[in-house]
Length: 139
Image (cartoon, rainbow, N blue to C red; front, side, top):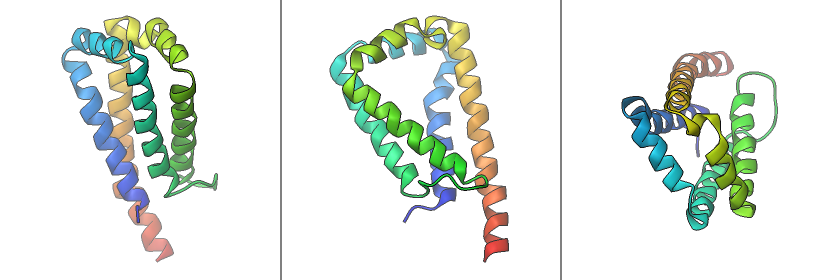
């Protein structure tokens, strides 16, 4: 069974691995992202991958309850909606990727990478500090 701590740390590691290259070489990362979203079949495969991530989150927490655990439910439901969009309407995703600020400039890619890495650090903090405190109080 997945625990909230595992979900947060896994997502944080994924974000760091995915967006660290964007800080090192934003021009190349932007080109790779445009190539990645140029093919309909690839966008649909990405939708299936995002759906797996959504179910990973929702298997831990699917209800919108009070507290920080609501973050896991929010990420899970957003990921599920995103995966459905990727599967049903890949052309919209392709158009959005071409017009999005984050993918249209190197500055946007760098900003997106910084946001993702800061979010990853916050998730690691939540997993290591807040989850332990909740387990001690509840346990």
